[in-house]
Amino acid sequence: MKAQERLTDALYGLGWSTVKKLPEPVAVRLGRTIADIAWKRRGKGVERLERNYARVLPGASPERLAELSRAGMRSYLRYWMESFRLPAWSPERIRGGFAPKDVHHLTDGLAAGRGVVLALPHLANWDLAGAWVTTELNTPFTTVAERLKPETLYDRFVAYRQGLGMEVLPHSGGSAFGTLARRLRDGGLVCLVADRDLSASGVEVDFFGAAARMPAGPALLAQQTGALLLPVTLWYDDSPVMRGRVHPPIEVPTEGTRREKAAAMTQALADAFAAGIAEHPEDWHMLQRLWLADLDPAKGPA
Image (spheres, rainbow, N blue to C red):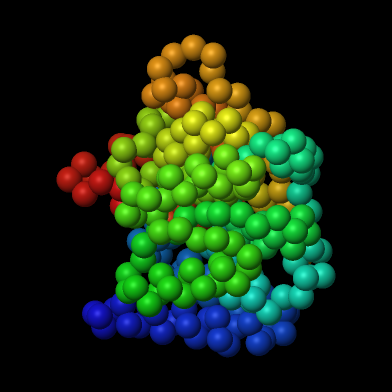
């Protein structure tokens, strides 16, 4: 294991072991302090976040983008402070920590015996939303996780999400799709963060007026299994409660090839994501390149 990987693993381990023991107001202040320090240092992640915000708000002034990136870093660190503390939250705290709208799209689909695919962008805290589903709705679900380096860090994330009631499959390896399809055919729930393609074989979409690539998996799963495909968007306000919305189902087109149908459904998903991001851009934690014009073709997604 490289020294940098050991350090990263140790820092995440410290977060899960120490931050969860802090009183909530202390954790909130700590997160904001770390966010402001990182923002002032103008590292690559902050600069990339600002460039991504410039695509979301093409007419924004440099001052507005700087203000937005500072708010974005505070939102990002709120996500991390909450995530480090989630394993110590009581069921009551989890239930009270998220207030989603239009949950009937999800509960009606599950009650009808259909599988459901929830697809989310990197908005606010998707782990808290997942914990709410397993706690408030008493509904387990299956998700996938990116293979991280070092392996011990990946294991930490898997253990963390399993502790919140999630079944976690590795993104790489090729068997995840089949397992997800089986869960859906059995009437189960699958949750996928789906605004960034990790395979370089996703679907090209128009996203805020420029070409980007998003994973085809959610659309293909819905096609093959008959499951509902529901976009979900999340956001923070000034309260300790995260907000969210379950959007209406994305229907499978009646005409076209399998790939054409997946492309149309993924574009509809991108449009739902864009609507949520445009309303709450500071809660979109995209610190990586996303649009095709920003990607190095020699390296793929970065």
